[in-house]
Length: 126
Image (cartoon, rainbow, N blue to C red; front, side, top):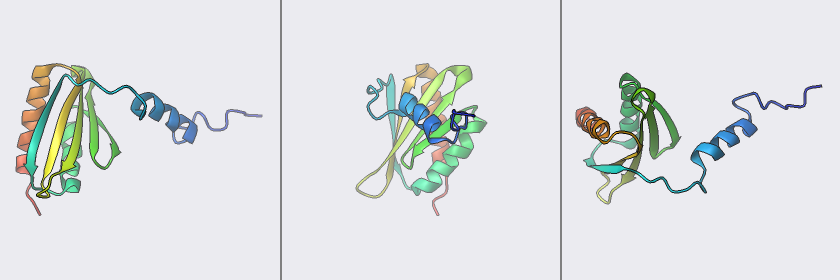
């Protein structure tokens, strides 16, 4: 008789909650970010913005995770670069994207933010 009850299934609640607790726990210590940059005044709907970013990230060698509708977490193993992109809606209905560097090289992060800004500038508002 198998008593593991689906623990080896990635989609099982036990497995997912273990990953969630270890990686993205609400009670985890606050991440100290080495750098944060703001991209303000984005006049594109959030859904369009995040779709464009999610298509762009793998082309830049990043794996990404989308924990909720306001945030994308990206990692580029080859450069040991982790980036968090958190969106907020401003009073004028434009978006601000807070781009943070919890782990990685400052110069690579700055280059990432510049390329991200170029990508955002190229998204045509509907």
